[in-house]
Structures are given as C-alpha cells and as structure tokens.
Image (cartoon, rainbow, N blue to C red):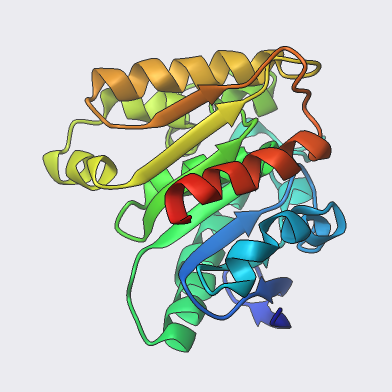
Length: 247
C-alpha cells in the first residue's frame, strides 16, 4: 500500500500541520481524527487495515489530517465565540490548503469525500454541509452534529457558532443550488445503540429528520444495542459502508 507523510507551515493556522496519505487512486477522502486526536490515529487504531482492500485495489485514497481541537472545541479557557473562530481558521486550512494539494496531485477538481468517527464524524458532517461545492459526500460514524454540545450547550447568538453547527444552520437552509448539491451526494450517517452512544443516537436521528424535511436522500443507520462507541465497531462499520458505495 502506498503510504506518504506530508507537512507544511499553514498560513491559515500559523503553525505546522501534518497528515498521512494511504493509496494512490480512486475516490479521495479527507479523514478527520477523533476529539483532540492526531493524523496517525486512524492508522494506529486499525482503520487503515480495515479499509485496506479498497485502498489496495485503487478504489479510494485516504488523506488523514491532523486536528486543532485543543485550540478550538476542546480548549478549556476560550469563549464559545473564540472556539468557533479558531475552528474557522481550521476550515480555511482544509479548504484552501489541503483540498488544493489533493486536487493538484490528482490533476482534477473532482469533489472529495469526508469521513470520520466520533468527533471526526462531527467534523466530516460539518465540512460536507458547509462546502458541498468541494465535498461530494460523507461517511460519519458516531458523531455529534449540534456543536453547542461542545460549548456547554451555549445558547448565544454568535453567527460563528451558528454556521459551525449543522443542526443549527441546516433547518434554515433553503438555497436551491446548495440543496441540489446535497441531493446528488453520498450521505452516510451511522451510530450504534450501545454504551456511550446516547448523544450520538439523538443527533443522528435529528439529522435524519432534518434531511428528510429537505428531501435530501441519506443513509441513516442505527446499529444494535451491543454496538458501542469504540474502535472495534468502527473497524466493522467503515468497510461495510465502503463496500456499499464502492464494492
């Protein structure tokens, strides 16, 4: 399997950022790490091994990026507005730096898939729905989609927070062109119903209702009561959905 390490000093974040690439062909994915996680966590927790048949057969390439959650959503001292604004710097890093890197190496402006587990799923859903002109779908496993959850259920009216929380902005989004993009995309949102999944079940069902109200096709899947919020289950879920999309 092709494996590459890349790093550069990000002008958007004013710091060094690292990521790993697995594969060399097929559908490109940006994979977001778990809460305050690192770019190597997907590999270290068996997810690359689980997806290996699809990578090695040239059906997809995974670009596993780093997070800055300790500077944004997970920072203990910042206000909700400051956390959201720092996330917006990360948004610019992904869209203005990582995406052009992917496109330049592939010689194509094709849209990219997003994926992640836990907080990585939250990021994946947020990036897809904020930038459907860049991203063509998402595989999100066990995520939270109301980002006020990460802000002690902040009830303020900051627009930075609002537009960084899919369950805030999606219900009010009615732009025909944006909705058309969503409707031609591959949207997979899944959660288990076992230990530590209660908030994820709630938000997964909320996303189901919002998307259905907008007539946006999506595969919303709740697995059984034995399916916990943990890597062994995500190792099973990720290739299961890859098989359905690319098998």
